[in-house]
Image 1: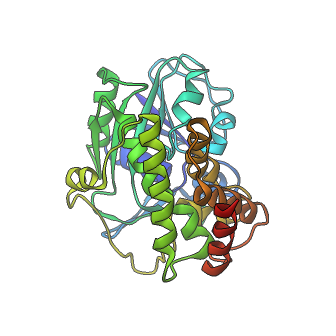
Image 2: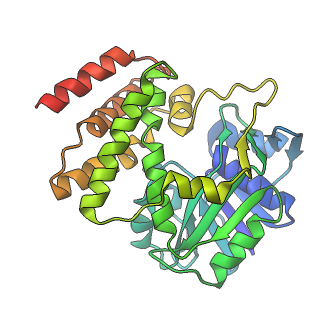
Image 3: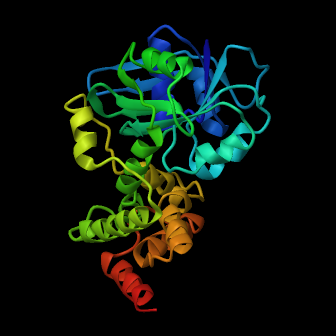
Length: 320
């Protein structure tokens, strides 16, 4: 079985590297300067315990497919459709992404779709380089068939992931875990907008409280932080890497790279959408979605907004 990792950034690069180290055939798909660096120099994987350069086959787009190919999509949600363009619809697709809309979107074009809940703190800012900050395992990846169930392929993927540096779990209700992760990811926009400043947690908790209300009204089950902590235990603990400054998570990194886009529509925007469908106001998540998109389009640096400005905008939206 060949794993084709589409989007070999922080998450995809780490997954591809660990599968490669575990003896599996891997093809990384990347773009631009990152693709050129991977092709020329290989993937430099930095972890708390080591630095390795791995020479993994790399492509810049679709290649002739094989019957034993598995597509692992690790792009941001806003890039999912474009990333899968040109790949045969009979191939299985694993959505190793934040948010909960990718699986439904992909199912329109591909028959076999798998959700993956990703707990993998990593950094990708420099072409050809990925830093995975967790120890003793780089990440915990829960996989299951979408919309529900565990089949032989899901069990095999979980087993393959577990062979080197990752914890793979097969879970029949994987979307419940992804909705729990979604609540946790609502703070990504706050971190990207204002950085780690005193008082930011107030906004994060407000966004999460809105989400819990909305999901309850919609009848959508989600995992709790207590469940998440119990399953992870001490397997995936963030550690510092000498010489590597992990400024923030995936949304922070989008601003730091100046990519021009951000995944807020599929994180905070998912709560806004559900709120509108079920008649629940979500002013905090709406402001975070709107402002994160604005800052990304303007290519401002992470932390460019003050907490006071953000709170004022939320107050204005809440009053309308």
